[in-house]
Image (cartoon, one colour):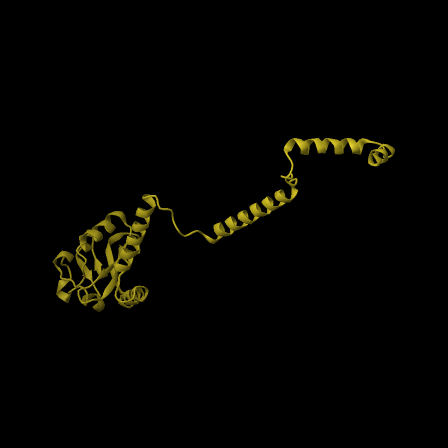
Length: 205
């Protein structure tokens, strides 16, 4: 559909007349006087904005009969590079919109919307976990990497403890008093310092 600079109908196609209620006698009438099946009350305002900025507009618009159209509004430029109104095109995109709706229903079965009960249940679970955490209860689920690290650390600690216990000197005998054990130790040290001949004499005595 072609409109002049005053947004009056200049000419139109048969397909456009099925969307905008047009008859041959409507040529020269402003677009605001025409009836339309589109839920697009901003059509006139968008056409004026395109004339002012010379930047095209494109929107997906639903019709009252359930169809969807991609409405494009472009400046109408003549061969001698003059702007003499706008061109409005209507592309039927109903099949694509229905495929999008079918895909959305497959992702959310049983008629549940992405923001429906499933999402609400998830939010309630998260809020309950946050309450437990704020009350001082630590999270009970520990990541596998952290569990493995803790096991390795405990095993290494046990090995170090075992090695230290093997290197410790044997505990002193509890059969003699500590003073006697100390005296015997000193005698043994003196005996080691003696020459072999003195040790033989000491043994004969």
